[in-house]
Image (cartoon, rainbow, N blue to C red; front, side, top):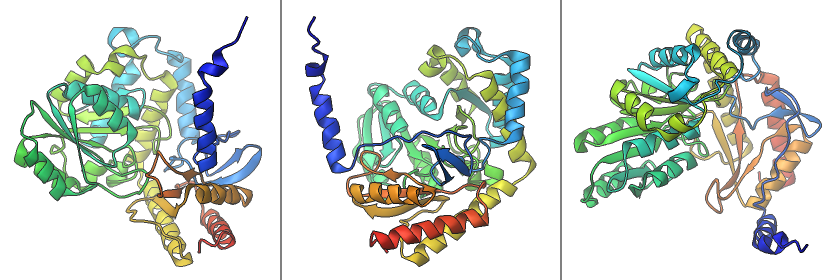
Length: 396
C-alpha cells in the first residue's frame, strides 16, 4: 500500500524548514522538576527566568496540601460540564471568594484564561456588532473576537486619541465593545485604564480588560488592574487567569451579576467543556487565602523586578517601556535572540527567546520573568550570566 501522507504534508515540512532558517522555529525544552525559582530543564539545573509563576506559588506546600485534601474528599475530575453535572461545592466557593477578593458583584471560573476570553467575547457581541481592540492584545482576545463574527477595529497600542478617532469613524454598529489587555505580556506596559473607562462612558460602550498578567501582581495584594486604578464598578468585564501568579490553572470572568449570568448561559467553553478539576480549584482557593493574608510576596516580586530592571539598564541592555515585573531584553534579530537564549542556558539561566509571530518581526527579545521565588543571590547570578553573554555576543 502506498503511503501518500508525506506528499500531502510536504508543504508543512517546507514551512518548518523555512522557520528554522529564519531562526523562528520554537525548540521546546522539557522541565523535569517542580516549577520553581530553580528547575531542571533537559537534564540541567538552571535558574528559571522564563515562567509566569510570579509569586512562586506553583510548588508551594500549602497549595500542594490543599489539592491533596480535596482529592481525598471530592476525587479528581468533575466528570461533566458545569451546566449539566460538573459544578461542585468547591467551584461555587472559589467564585464567591474571587468575587470578594476582586471587589466584583460576581465571578465565573473556566478552564483557562484563554477559554475565558473565548467564552466571554462571543457571548457579548456578534455579527453586526463592533469590537475596538488594542493592536497588541493577546492571541486569546484576537481569537475570541474572530469567533464572535463582530467587526474588529484595531486601534494603535495604548493610544486613546486613535481609539476616539476609530469610534467616531465607525458609524454602523449594533452593540459595541472596547477590549484591552491590562498588562501587555510581551512589553510589560500597562493599559491606560482610567482613560479607557472615560471613553467607554462617553460613548456608552461596554469595556472589557484582560488582566492575565495583572492578577496577583497589580493592586492591593495582587487584586489586579481595576483595584490598581481604583476603578471598581467602572469596568464592565474583567477577565483573568489563575495559571500565572496563582500558580495553578483556570480562568476568571468578573463583572456585574447580569454579565456573569449571561456568560453562564451562552459562554461556549463553559457550556461545552468539562469543569476545572478538583485539585486545581482547591489549590486556587488556597492561593486566594495566601494573597489575602499577606502582601509580602507581591512586594518581593516588585522589589526583585526593580533591581533587575535597573541593573540590566546599567549594563547597557534595552528593556523597552516595561512598567511591571515583565522585563523584555530587546535584541531585534530572531537568530540573535535564539543564540542569546542558548548561551544563557549554558551559563545556568533559563530565559527563552521570543520572536515572530508572538512579537512583530524585528522585535525579538529575551523576556525575563523574575518571581518572588528568587533570592538576591539568584538575581546576581542571572545578571552575571546576562553580562557574560551580552559581551560575548557584542550586545552591550
